[in-house]
Image (cartoon, rainbow, N blue to C red; front, side, top):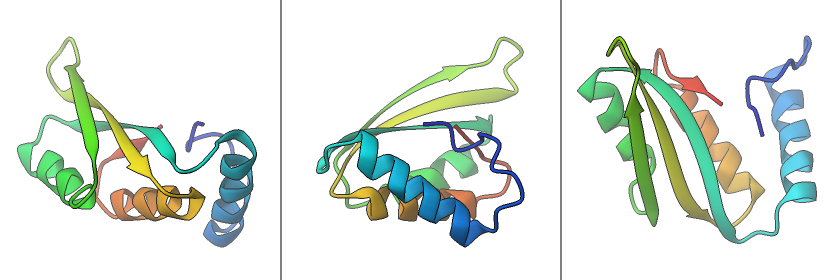
Length: 101
């Protein structure tokens, strides 16, 4: 699921409503869900993302870009439903400079 896919001119409510429908159609919640983010190599941004996943069971892997400017993060978290996935995307979306895939 690519959060960056072309969503036309939808307002955020329409976008998240559409995302919820897609998630419910393609996933069998509760389950592990893979979140993918790209951040600048900034420890503070990583800490902010960790805070979003606080109180959740998750594993994380990361890979630094060739030039060392960016890090890609894979956060595999156990989520209960599509609403929880959307809430996580909304919270991470508040962190400046994070690209959500």
